[in-house]
Image (tube, rainbow, N blue to C red):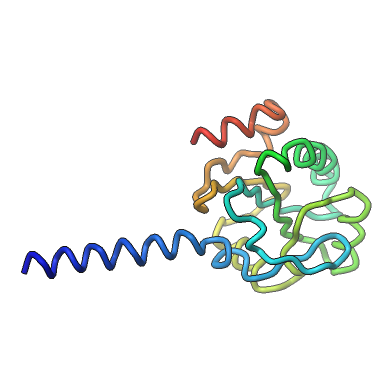
Length: 163
């Protein structure tokens, strides 16, 4: 009986570790796109802090914050931070224009796809702009990341790493 309990515990641990390692694909699917429409494997996000940015071209507060986020991301990209953009735009053309105009170098969920819908639902997003940050295991370390970027600048990255 004891051996069976040990085996069950080991099996459950193994399953949990496998799920944890595959969190990126579970959240974002296998592929994301960049501002040029080039397809990227989500495995590029492995071992990084990942900001999920919910935003839209038509939204004035988004358009005010996005250039600051682009600057923040570009300063932190080599330190293991990346962003995945989830567009609330009205069309793919609007999303593409927004990504191009603001020089977003990060990855995005395909417009109107299942990934964007699932992330919006999972994180209960009702207003934009919203930026939340996930640790390298997919756990939310900040759901107030927009404010932290604005107030703390690059220090926000260290704060997220410590959580």
